[in-house]
Image (cartoon, rainbow, N blue to C red; front, side, top):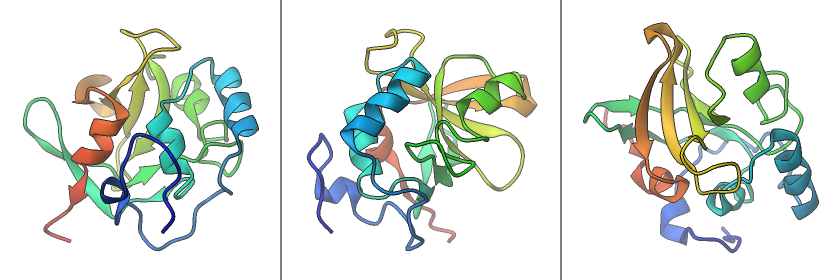
Length: 167
């Protein structure tokens, strides 16, 4: 696998995604700029780098430990683009979660859990502003939009993901 330039190493990206194909073509610099402009946030370099390995899709490394020590599942990362439904600007992108489900507008929804419920993973810009380096948080709608810190930045998020030992 050829690793595009960015803050993550080949080891960080090894076995990150399942063998299913990306949902969208790798995003060009122009598309990244357009998506950032529409979202109103600068995407972390590591998120762009990951999208150039696989632009959205099911993860193989699905477990990460959140701030209170609980292991949680992150099954899917969104694509940079406008389609399919689960890209950042698609029908089930960030705007959908905020407008249809009342999620707090903390930033950009980049991942979710597919096992059920409405647990989502966000680039949270509330502390850094729209051009800063966002932290990654989990927001659980069924628990009153409980927000928990997952990682201080997207690089740490990717490095913290691991394969579920229970398969």
